[in-house]
Image 1: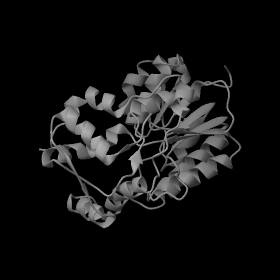
Image 2: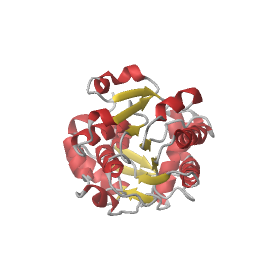
Image 3: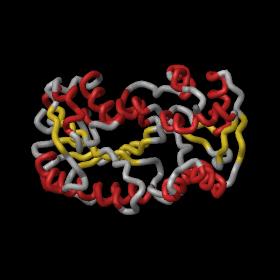
Length: 299
């Protein structure tokens, strides 16, 4: 399959990148020597190198590393970076990577975006939208994966929620179609290995969209702890995050998640995951039950 291999994955030392590579191997049957794991720290991926996966350095802040990183790649998964503290840096990183991939002759690029980035209340939504547009304007064929929020993101709050018995939220009755990180990785791997590309955007969601109150009920049932949902304003959410130790920029960013939820930005449920994988995604109830050991009160 000369138009398929090799397949490269950026952010391969991150949690999503590692899962995508494992899914390429185990679910899609991609030969290890046809996978390229790209990371700023090649020494962190010895387990991949030991499996005959090519490990290459790719630092989006160092253009000199990118030409060699993308050399010979046919299909590239560009995992969005986690640079949120400095305005404009994330988009600059993405544009640098896309341009380098195009110059290196990458045939197809895939990007991990977010649901409904146009007009979203999320502070970094513009980074995703502009990256999508930059990719579409390139000479490469493309796939956009608009990934809904991970179930795993809930773990940033569940410790304090379980300790206090209160879930402070500015999301109102807004719903979230969360999905497991492993399911998103499986969908990405399936998309990377597919035979046909049509410059397509997939919105990858869970099979149900839940309110905070509904999620709190599930968390309460599985943890055997009482949880009360406490409605607050956007400003109170931001202030509370700052008091918890987050820098103002990040506090505003994380508070904007609730605003976006309240405004319906992550409520859409699609069948795109099933279309790519042929199966249904894990539900929140199933995921919480499977990860019961992680649901511990904050110390």
